[in-house]
Image (cartoon, rainbow, N blue to C red; front, top):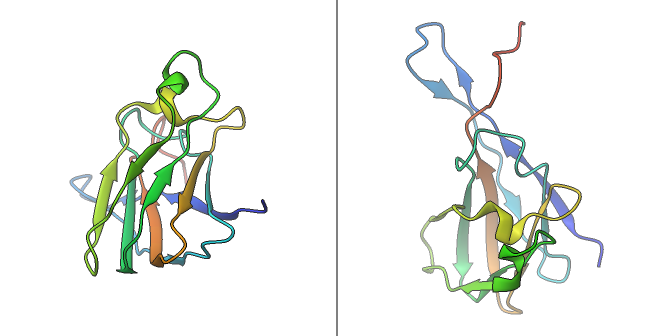
Length: 128
């Protein structure tokens, strides 16, 4: 399956160093392709948030990754609320992490909606 890819949005700290902001571009979901969240874990630990906004809700499957032993827990199937942003904060990274650092998500056949991901930047603030 050739998955559609999204990248994690990393907000940028403002000059006051009090808040971080970013404008989000939502990705429409193509059910047949599923989603690959590229470099899903290249951010501050336990800060990855996946936002799924269905106009027609159906089951969403967070695919088990390659990391033993947590991947043995298997896929996680959730059913988002229709016509609302549904926020999924990923707590168990090892359950879903693939060898290439991605997170894979599949969608039920009747799903229609959008997806995006946000996380806190990790490491030293880049110089611009």
